[in-house]
Image (cartoon, rainbow, N blue to C red):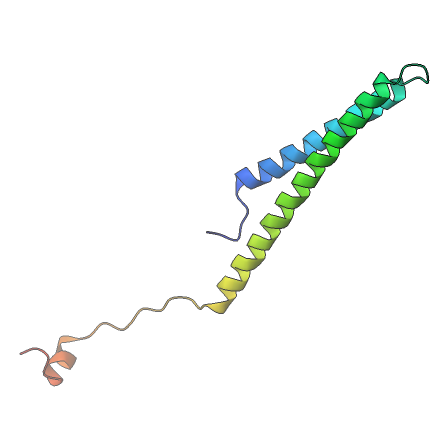
Length: 101
């Protein structure tokens, strides 16, 4: 797991933001078409606005999840250090300690 966001997460959040924009734009268009005698367009505007708000909320939740995951991975990476290799035992050292003949 990496602290860099994946392309799928970025596309998901961007898609949700785009859907929210379309929802709010549709709500504005229907609201402008509403007249006092015909409230169906106002009802459509409210429905589109609710849909846009839901998509905006989902995008915000996904963004917060991604940022928290990145913070957690950065904190985990700061705790550890880079791996270091042990020195290779030489044959003379092994003979001196009596491990081989």
